[in-house]
Length: 106
Image 1 (tube, rainbow, N blue to C red):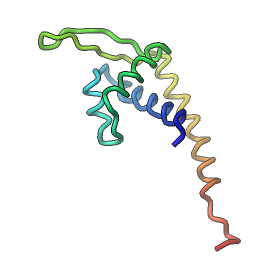
Image 2 (cartoon, one colour):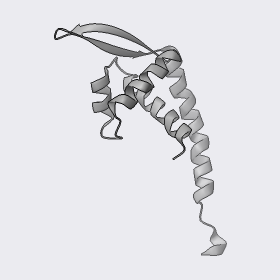
Image 3 (tube, helix red, strand yellow):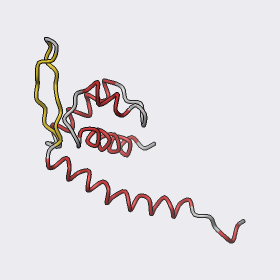
Image 4 (tube, rainbow, N blue to C red):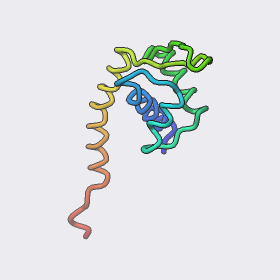
């Protein structure tokens, strides 16, 4: 898979993982596990990129004596998910074109 395409898809997956509630790294990985494998190092790279793009914010809270970072999706992050949904319609259309059966060559 094209690296840029995969990167964009992973970004959207992480945003989708936190769209309904704030979350932290381990829980994000756990929530995504039924759908895709994501290493901790890859996740934290994505989270930093999304924070720099202002698609999420981060806050630290103490949990069992340690600081835990919680990630919160911003309005811009929710907008990015909506943009993706619109883009996906075009991607599905392209996929349908590429994989269509040619009736003349059966």
